[in-house]
Length: 460
Image 1 (spheres, rainbow, N blue to C red):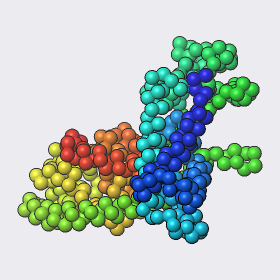
Image 2 (cartoon, rainbow, N blue to C red):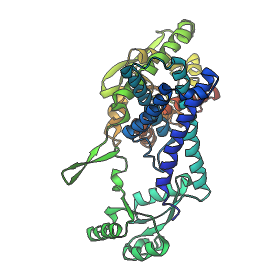
Image 3 (cartoon, helix red, strand yellow):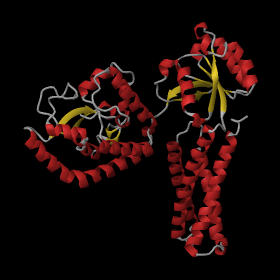
Image 4 (cartoon, helix red, strand yellow):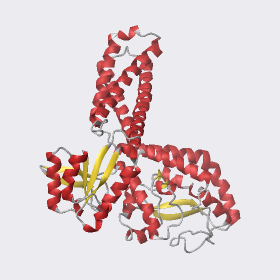
């Protein structure tokens, strides 16, 4: 069937990596020494052999080729970076242990650079080639859904709006009479339909079916070697990612740690925050703060900075810095800025429109209270109001708040006076918390810069 060649994709990926690894080694040798025949030297052949072993080992440790249809390209790149780092560490360790000094450092440097470049192009290129192939109708899987409900409809919508993942949705099966016009038949009709249309996967919404029907589906899928997957209950759709642990034979569902629980990811993000904020402070704020400070003083009486208590990681309060954009007032802690807000000064309108009022927060980033990218920090009063109204609102405090964030570049900036507006923002914030990657941060920074230059209609 069209969807049964997944194993070949893993083989192609791994063979392609090893081929490019060896090409990189040979090319680096020719570039360094200007000849190929000397590559037969025992030291270099032994190193090449170990390099292949190190690459296979690093791929095995990191499960690098366990790439699914729904795996994001950013996740593939993130895993490749980890694999390359581990590979280089293994090669360098072997050279130090064996005391192989005849292998030149320049050859190693050339080979590392070529390996990174070639395999990056190969992995990303092959991924997009597969996506294009699936959009054109190849490498697809036939799927049906047992149980009609909110989760089922969301899954159907995902299949139809993401043709690049290669799922061809055939329809629903459900016994509820009110859905008769929306389904292919009853759950009892499913088995015959699977055989007739050679269905590859069955998705089951267990909360829409009886326990007997679910048990029957499990037995049917196992007996006929058909993949069966389960959808969560509709009110669990916003739950954090789950993983399964086994206590002997008892499966236990547990909340999976978020990406920034990982020490390596924390270190990468913190290093970037320090470097990026230092560059902004030294090359921009060093002259911009005095300039804007003078303009603020001329524009209206009061301090240059507006310092407000906001909640950070772990819901801990910190002093958040901004350029003052409003006249002194008694409502700053309880009332959000609104369109045509009379409290905003003439200069304040300009600062807010161009996001210049947020720039002092890079001082918060440098000292570790904030990050360059993360959920925007809310005033404490606003936090207290919404934490009881919006499910999982406090999940945004699992990581540091940011100067910019995913919600802001997706258009959820400015006033959020209505609960549905805040719910949309929080939903995106939680997505960022659970799906963080370094490359997502880079994308958000780029989009922030683009939006700032272009102008944001929600900024006032």
